[in-house]
Image (tube, rainbow, N blue to C red; front, side, top):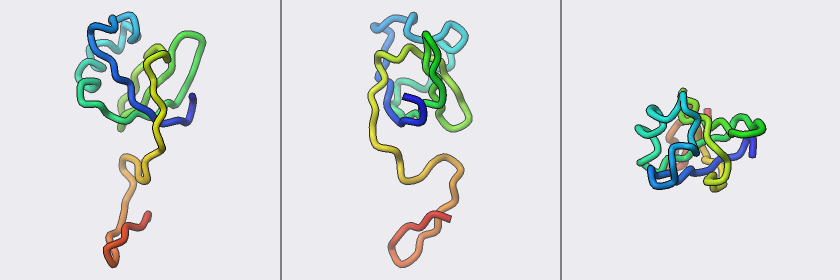
Length: 87
């Protein structure tokens, strides 16, 4: 799953055991908006999801892979002739 993009449709009903204990409070603030995360690391028990500059360790079973976005956080883009170009 590393270097993949996806959503993590977690709700309290799934149980807080799906989220690393150090990340539960901060993940609760981000998870409810159906955001796209980048999976940046895997280990035996958790995957690490990145959203902007924030990182969250979660269990992998709820991760749903989606196509990578055309642009990522902080990337500059230029609008030119109604087409968007990466800079």
